[in-house]
Length: 373
Image (cartoon, rainbow, N blue to C red; front, top):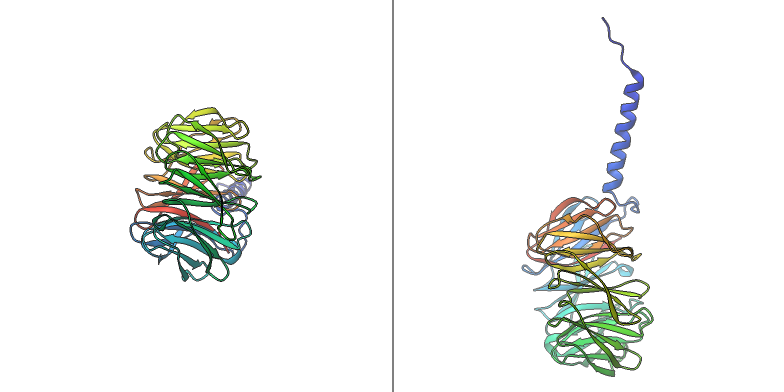
């Protein structure tokens, strides 16, 4: 007996197969990419003084670039197709041309720099040199230092206000915050704050700054217009990271020692909600629309997505060991997370919260930046 093929069934199966292949391709490929556009992740490796360049379209490492001992503070400059970073042990800033993966400048800034910030117009870069008690302003086009000033003892981070009118510097050994003119670095004020001040968040209107302590369960609220301390707010644990909601209304403070997330009302300077998250929730990332907060739990080896408006935590996404710094790709298709203990970069499909792959990096990766060109 001859069996006649069911052409309708065959056609239906072919259509379903094509649709499945298309769906997988769309999931793996960021939706905004056009042919010829590159999307790269750059990971700083503290143990071997290199940057690992990772192609986020092919999901492969493509280059290992020596930049100097103890690289940190890497920041992307899309306007110039450059990556800026620091050699904390070498005492200089370096500039990488992302189109060639070549170092095109090294700028001496002083001993032990850890963080770098760009002015809103990308004209200047600012670096605090902790080991030389100084702050420098760098012209991004000429790579020349345009101003240098003394700060307090062990200046940790220099952050420019969103309007570009004030530079805020935490001085760790003095328990102070220096307020500087961004062009001349002349002192406009000095405010005493919490012990061992480290991180800074500044309201969009430039009116207030929030400063964390590296050793105490406290955060300082500083009036930037009057150069005055408004409050030292007690927290439930030592702050690990802080992120400001895009509209400036709420401040999110993760704390490994408190095992959770604290939410502060930036108008009243009062703590509101607390979410218990896990073993050691530390580094955090807020989506550009302010809807989702991603918190990395270093000890548990996973990332927790949180719908921040209703304070709902989704199922944790298991990644490598010691997850820390993270970034979303442009368009928000993928979340990439540095795993400092397993020496890899986790790539997560943001829409579904599923792990795509782990990509090897150098030894003890720490910081992360993403460039498209």
